[in-house]
Amino acid sequence: MPNSDIQSSADMPLWRKVWEFPLVAMVIGLGAMVAAVAAVGGVMSFLPDSLSPDVATLITGIGATIVIIAVYKLIIPRLGRERRDDLPMKGAVGDTALGLFVGFAIFSAIVGVAAALGIYRATAYGMSEDIVPLLVQAGLVASVLEEIIFRGILFRFVEEFAGSWAALIISSLLFGFGHASNDNATIMSSLFITVEAGLLLGGAYMLTRNLWLAIGLHAGWNLTQGLIWGIPVSGNDYQGFLDSTLTGPEILTGGAFGLEASVLALVIASSAGLWLIWQAKKEGHVVPPSWER
Image (cartoon, rainbow, N blue to C red; front, side, top):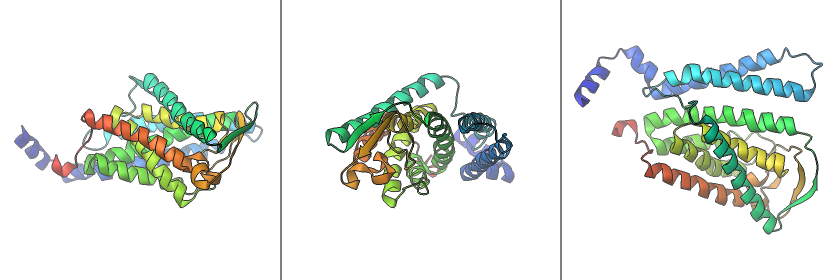
């Protein structure tokens, strides 16, 4: 059997070898996502000015999510040497719901420790003025788009070529420093997101081998800190159900970027991510580099 596989690979036309090469597939997938986002932006620019900001945000966010998922389903499963769909319908609701709960639990634990140390304090509560932007932008669009790009494309095709550990490192670094242009971002905040979110979301993908748990975790993390606890989401300040203050050393508060850039989030979220990766390794989900397979 191995000999016939080698022979069939040797007989493959050059154009097909290039087309199916994992890093070429990665570039094609990223290009498709960029084109999808640009197309949505172009279409949504024609929305009437009479729409309220919340309605415009809702239409744009839902429209973008539908187009992003559609482009993914049509193109990405057909790329690379190992064809698969990381957004299967089976298990989608259960894995996403579990991710939402775990994201809520992890970030609530971070806030709980910060409150116990006197770092976090809620100062007022009421109806969130930014509930639609939080649900749509920070929750829905950010989780779907970023997980498809960083885990569904970057991680997947780097892993197919260079193995799981290289994919985890590269996707985590790109994800962390992809937030470097956010409001109040620093080198430290990008490094912290690289480690804590890279391990957590990469570990979720490695364990389940689909994107739904990671999407739920991502959305649950963002919504819990912004909507529930009133903490900046990756440096972006939203009005949640609570007004809060963070006081103390910046290494513990995360400064203006929020608790994501704190050592508290680094320790708690990274520990959860390492546990997921350990479970993935136990399940045999660690992929060696292509030259060792």
